[in-house]
Image (cartoon, rainbow, N blue to C red; front, side, top):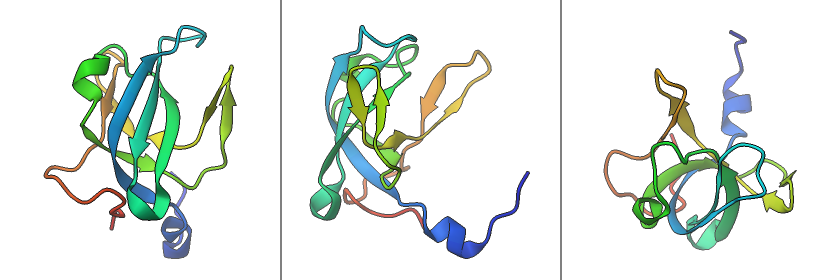
Amino acid sequence: MKTISWSEFEAVELRVGTIIRVELFPEARKAAYKVWANFGPEIGEKKTSAQITKLYSPEELEGRQILGVVNFPPKQVGPFLSEFLLCGFTDAEGAVVIARPERPVPNGARLM
């Protein structure tokens, strides 16, 4: 494991957002959704592609708070431009479990 400095960690913008829209992403090589999230007035709405289809349906994702890295450069994923990284962990079967706050917090709140 590589050790990083505090200033390197501070450069990563880990923010809370609320999922406002989810669509199927049939063009993706691996099963994925297109996800839009509101990160509050400072950052606004951002979209991403996320391989979270094994554990979540689009309906149960809408309205859920998530943790995202919002300061990576945009990344082209097939025909879709991904603007943030939705954070999660893989379970024992390799499915992604979404990282989220334990209690509701304001959209845009930064991980401390």
